[in-house]
Length: 345
Length: 141
Image (cartoon, rainbow over all chains, first blue to last red):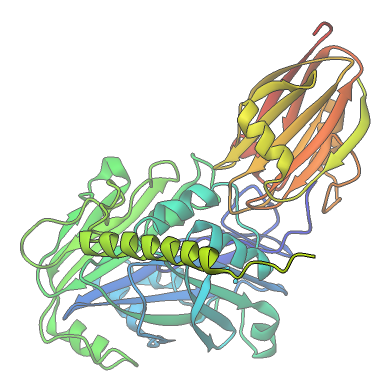
């Protein structure tokens, strides 16, 4: 039987959410009905071994709470309110139709069990950084009143096998209304993640969608040099490289002047990848190699499973674990052998 | 087709579940058929089952997913009711079972007549996603 649904997770590095009357469209589900993902925009910048995600959550009206879940490539060192114009400025740089900016921020603001590594409140958003496998994340979501869609078990495992770090963003619509936020207002969020292997989660954009439903998103990449990408953004896979050239000085200066964007380097390469794919097409993530070697990781793209070494399980660790286990069993046996005999009557 | 209530147990990986593990997906225990149904990635496995009419059948339903599921068996009319139902939890009828994430539930059902039934999870979106199985009830054991 259908339960009074709370909400659902779904989303990637950036998404816009809006209320809708039916469950069928999937995505995020709130107490007032389904919450759909509209077109989303994200900046994934990579400089000095640090990945910067800038994304936005849009207030869709209504009451109650709903949210999204974002897999991350590592533990963030900082989660803060993002700059006010970074995403809009990127759109203006690459989009020949200025009005397209309305797709993103009309104004701005948008939108446990696992170990809670970090909790941050940004406007009406409650953001929690979680560490855990699929089962722990699922339990955390349930404990916090969120219901995951039926494809969540497979999708969560897809991500947890590579990185057990997730960011849950719960949008408190009542608080947003109390703050005077209007429908369409977005809350930009900036996540700083040290990682040697930058990637952008794409598959989770299809969470809760049926195979034929469309996923639309714009991904901006700002890297020190022209990046190698995997999968290659070719139209048959639902990705299109719409912009790839050195970032202009004007763009970099504008971005650097926004809140929290001091990390923007003096020179960079700007890429824009437009996603227009069916949910069933998005069975991968976007791996980025900005080192110049041209070898983006098949594991980070979700095309291969990580090896034990890639998971940080070295031979030494395995040996240590084995020795610890043997020592533990030995200790139990010794304790059992030395236990004083019970007094007999 | 009706289902006679006999017994319903629950709990995480209980003894009955362990027994079923040993006995396999479909076996008998003291002459009583035992059917084990696994749930993983929001799918029933097996998705096709044949059971006899007129005898109690023990179903052991193991949910390996990190999300909750339901196992509701019945005819079209029953499923139609559940598609628009409002019961948050099923724990009163042996043919309607809620299985929390990572847990195992057992239920015993006696099917009075032969026929074809479906077992479905009616949580939002789950049936459309493919959480459907077919149960054939035969008149002879």
